[in-house]
Length: 407
Ligand code: GCU
Image (cartoon, rainbow, N blue to C red; front, side, top):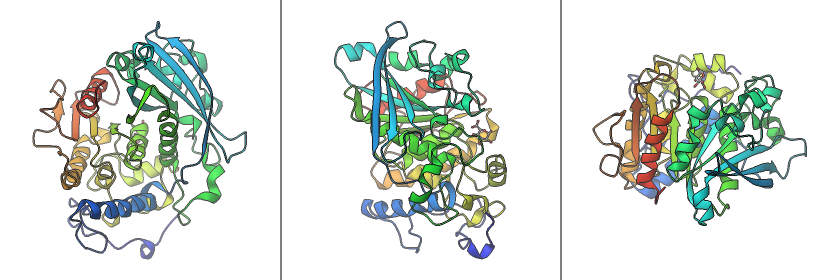
């Protein structure tokens, strides 16, 4: 879609461009001074983010969960529960989500519930651990995307480190993004066509792929919360790169999510669009035209007119805990502008009485993450390029230990 300048919102008050659209100010210029004001401002920002960036997703549908089964995996250390999430109003041949939940067997045996890290994966649930009990989710392969069935078993084991997550007393839940949208570039694929007539926004603001994946994560939250073994208030969402963008969007727009952990999420995630010398709006919408609402591409070259930025999305998480993790050598995701976004969002946490990001930033490598060192906002880096690994997962779990009742 192309838009004339006339159709764009007037420029936000942000000259030079290193100033960001204010968070604690309504669009009409009146100040946001109380937690009650913030509720209204939050709704306004959420609408703007949907309108100008990610698109409007359909309202939460009624889900049907079925074919649940359990198995011992990882030499008995984990109990696997697999749940098929279908959508009551859709035809039987519509996509469904295969949610795999790995729970620490000792907790299950003792009848204890656990906090859960919910991660979005792109290589298949069966790639997360090398165990034949895990159902092969190969929708990506069917659509010519990444993923290779049985050969992919366990290939992402060092990435998700499920055994490590379980040993810390947490469960791990995951679904493959291709269940919702295979990222093929074809808008006819995936779940979105089934909701064409049910979207709340005007033309040009239909949900993009990132919003669809985020919506899928929220359907997993629907399915996880009633599970006895899961602490409903202690579900953290996590994702890397494009999955980090979707995880941030899912957690920011769903207050049932107890902690949000975008990893190396870059543009469309925590990195600001303004003054971003890495991936610009034109780059990302050119390479991945389906990821956003069509409206977003129109801000290429005139980012100062965008009424929101990534600090607006981060702020929707407040006062819940948010940890943004970044690779010091992962330049494309622009860790500097991600940190700037988190800093810019901090006043919202403070307004709501939560402890913000503090001064000693960013936290690096082996820096301690504990009650003494972090509040409800954290930006953490390791000396890596673009990857997820056990060091990052430890940091997220340390942060979760601070905020959850206990792993
Ligand atoms: C590309 C894209 C990034 C994205 C990444 C990924 O590099 O430009 O925005 O995060 O793919 O998801 O792997």
